[in-house]
Length: 111
Image (tube, rainbow, N blue to C red; front, top):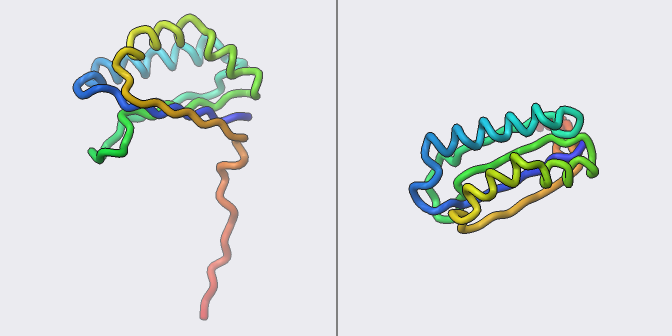
């Protein structure tokens, strides 16, 4: 499985509650439209205002690397891009194997 992350900074005032609900509904619909490829999705709003922070984080759990182009080319993904890309100031994406996100167990050391 692949974790696909997208972080975006949108212009001030763009990511209001209505936009947040639009993102959530759209990405839920993408998951429903591609159930074999998009296994899970989460949209998160930034909660701490700092200059380097992004506005929104989108996390997808994909079946494998062949699922990414299917998701990217899906009409719902293209449509949300058309609605919000003109308002994106910065964007970054990151993909990794799902098991690479697990933290190794650490034994507590007592002196």
